[in-house]
Image 1 (cartoon, rainbow, N blue to C red):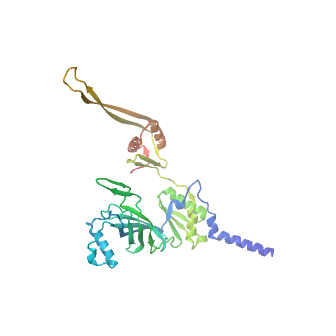
Image 2: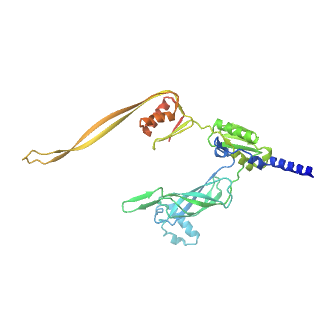
Image 3: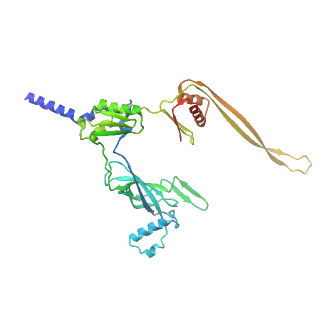
Length: 376
């Protein structure tokens, strides 16, 4: 009896070890030493699809399309005729309370009929505002011309527009709005996770080192053959414990932590003076001199009094003074340093962000800045 109980216990332990759920639970999760694979990669075959439609918004307070827009007039006439209104009456329709719009949406993977997705509506003609409008039933088509969703609902623009006698005020963009959960999915798009027991992972930011790190982590933690095909793709074979269960296998892969090798890149936004430095950006030995010219113009009022007992009048004459001052900031030659060292040196000289942008661009042209530079 004791021998039988021991055999049953060993059988239960063996079954638990061989089950995919047990393997998945034993996978180490992401910690402080890396980033989860699910955050830096996606599975090929599971992708979004874009939808578009042509619709009509009604209920506007005189801010819709003007009477000179022929397709809006035609859309309104087709609508009321569909519901039994006589054609001769439709000739008197005014479209100030209606507007034609383009409706766009993104169909996520794995959605099913009956699910809801958000939609965006954009004015197509000369409507001044979509505030308070309601989108009528609009079919949304995919690139293949098939209907995948139907949109309808009240439009939220997150702003306003108002006009009066010679004055106008607006906030945000009143001719573009959203309908949260405004489209009902009518058909789903087939998504394939694996083909012949093979998965393909696509990295969001292609990088040789990151692709190798992902493949190594999968091989080490799950004993699954993984090969980096290129900087953006890792091919993974589903192991025997997960055969026929790609969802559980992908869940186990997604929790793995890998180090991410970020490229050395400097992103500059000249409009706002914003600088973002990513990765180990280094600077070779270089000497920097940055000069700035300051011009000041002062205008003062000089009062001239006429001589006593004369018939002159007091005169106020504006007098201008122009001064120019050039200040030059010289930074000592830098050894191999990072952009952080350069920024600290410039901050000590009270340099503005635009001065820093000009200096970084000059260092890049001199070949001393070892990073990609992107100007927005």
